[in-house]
Length: 507
Image (tube, rainbow, N blue to C red):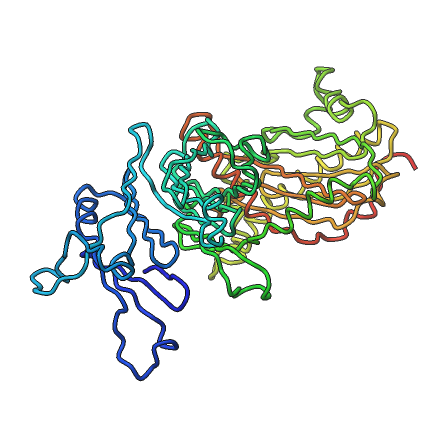
């Protein structure tokens, strides 16, 4: 089904018969519903189906049909016979198998064949629908996405191949699975990886050939990728322009991306917020005072070691380790962030599995179960407290006062953020979040803790993560998957005020 506009809808049957229907508000509800026009592309469609090729359709000017499959594009003028009775089709196709009636099978006005170096076409779109006749000749294009991150561009008026955009920028290939022109200059491109790109074609289009589109670069014939992001790890199936917004106020153009897992995401089709951000950054010096601050980030997988094991070690380097570690910058940074992993022994069934099921077993042995579970839970809480105390004491010994902004823990993860006393009041809007990725998101032995805040008018976010173990290809994929789940799953909430008045250091 192809929604055309102007009260028309085009439908395609499996046998290649197109039927053009008109809205009843135009034809009148009392009249029987009959097709305005019927024509067939059965010959080409039969060839395509025989080879199992992916097909795509594009309708221009309510009459010109572009049909893509594999490395071929056929263009039909579906009104040729109606406009000029002398232009009769060469072929008449049966209305359906075994039928004695026939419908017009218009001959293609153009058959575009890609080269053997091109990959198969996966989707097709055009900006011509936004242009008047005078501009179509110079600025009307048809865009064909391929299996290798290339977009092949044709002149809409002459069917001439104009250029090829390499959206992979020469760094590998990902199949383009959906495309849509949102305006005469914005082309939205969706990928099998779940990534979405927006290409601006509003610049000078004088350069042809194969051009790469690096992010934010406008020296590739005037066209560039102005925004790219990963909506989800699931493939983009379709991109739609919502002209009558369902979820936002009217007057705002929104674009919907439909993904292979059934999810639908709505985006600002005009990229207004991005434009505002760019313009604000250009004028930052006019309205803001900028200064450098020191931020020290310390991360350590401690393998369940206790701080007293370091302090009582016979090795002097162990005894001085925390002091050396936390004073690595040597200039009393404004912010110190400490992230620890495996604070508890994650291989211990007592310290992990039992501590997760707080409340014990429901039934007649309930009180006994609670008693058994009390010690592991208390041991874990005590372990976090020991490390918090050790960090506070070590920072105090540096001679600089620090205050605790926030401390959070989750099974074996622990994060603590400190701010120097003289800048502590510059911090506001503290938020915390936790995401579990172990056992499919049920277990906190793997996952991440996030702490975010605003320092003056600049936002900061720190995430302490413990990913899947191993460095093999399979494990790397799992680690990347966990990282994506952590970043996307972060829902920040306001923490308790427990640490807001805690001061570490000399009074």
